[in-house]
Length: 57
Image 1 (spheres, helix red, strand yellow):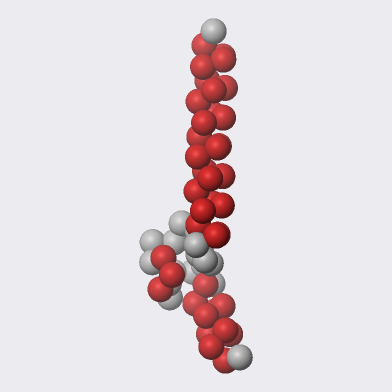
Image 2: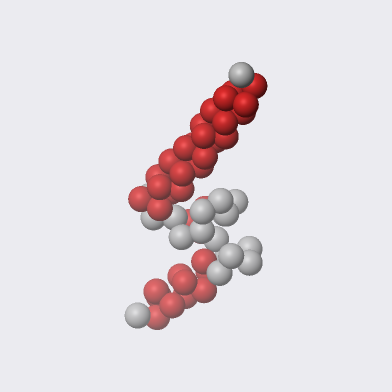
C-alpha cells in the first residue's frame, strides 16, 4: 500500500512541474525558474544574451 502512495506522490509532483513549465513557456519566459523573471541579466542562465541578440535585429 505504501508503494502506491509513494508512486502517486511522485506522479503528482511530476504533473505539477510539467504544468508549471508549460505555463511559463506560454507566458514567454525564456529562463524558467530564474528569480529575475523576464528581466533577467545577473544570472548565468544566458537569457540576457538572448535579449541582446533580439535587440540587435
